[in-house]
Length: 140
Length: 80
Image (cartoon, rainbow over the protein chains, first blue to last red):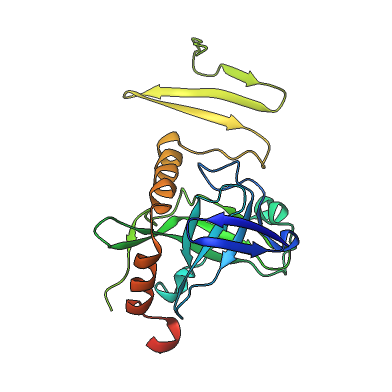
C-alpha cells in the first residue's frame, strides 16, 4: 500500500489497483494513475484523484443518471487503447464542473470512457456531436 | 513556426506517417485533407482548447460543494 496527501486528506491505496489513463486527460496528459474515490454521501457523484499530482481531482458522474439516452461507443482504436475486445463492457463517465456560483454542468462533449475489465480509461472528444462542454443538469 | 506556401493539390509530409494536402481555398477558409495513422488524434484546435479549459475549471471544486450537491441531486434509482 502507498499513501498520498491530497487536498482532502491522506489517502492510502494499492498501486496495483489504480485507474489507468494511458494518455492522461486532455490538458493533463502527464497524469496517468487515478484513484476512484466514492462520495461520502450516497449519490450520483464521485471523484477521481490523481496519484501523481495530489492537487488534482475531478468530480465525475454516470451521465445516464441525468441524460437517460446518452451513449458513447468506443471505436476500434479506442478499444485498443482501453485494452478491451468488442464484447467487453465500456462505460461513459462525465466530468462535472462546479462553477463559482455553485451551478453544475456536465461535459458531455468530452466523456471519459472506462473499461472495467482492464481498469483503463481515456477522455475522448465527440467533435461531431451536438453535445456541449457545459451541459446544465436537466430541470427535474 | 515554419511557414510554407502551398497551392491547392500540393501537400506537406510530417515525418513518415502524416500527410497534409491542401484541397482548396474558398471564401477565406482553407480545406485541408489529413492522412494519419488511426491512433493519431486529430482535433480542431479551438475544440481541443475548450476541453482543456473546461478540465482546468473542473478541478476547482471543494468537498463542501460536493457534499451539498450530493444531497440535492436526483439519482436514477429515486427518480424511477
